[in-house]
Length: 260
Image (cartoon, rainbow, N blue to C red; front, side, top):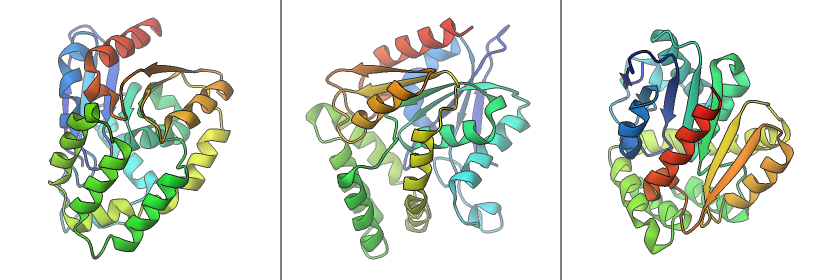
């Protein structure tokens, strides 16, 4: 089972589950934890192979990695904790997992908050992925990760986010990185389906105005999906919860409280 931590708020029945992105860990939510604990029960988890969810030679982590199998890891945790429904907050690739979870287990999802959401890989993103596939076995994964981080978060004010994700990525093993990277073959058809299917679960997208790779598609998705809304934080890049934590916390907590 994944490594995870729960924080219980006395008298609250509302749960918030945080899902980090590829190469990160639950530690990327450290600027959210204090504020969210005041309002909700909180579940922080490390995805397989990340943080303290280390792969074991004898366990299921050696199975082929798919978005469905990784989504089921999350379900296993919330089942174990007897959490019937939760709000889910994700960043970057974590938003794909949350959207997949909502598609497969809609009755478990109270709402979705999608920070730096990935809803389409544009031409630049697809070129990056292809380069990664070509070089993933011959170039140290950290070189690739630093390169990707710089392309996705290029500006000076994105530096803290880049350094945080690179620092967390250092905890991965080369084989683990390759397993996750192979998921890219699933991404395009999955995202195409997500864009077309209006799941009709309350969804808040929080995007940086400088998230050049992913913001344009999210703007189009929100126009088509009935229960979706978008807040764009100016002068902010991909990892909105790290770059603008006070704004992120204020917006998300206000949104979730309004759903009660």
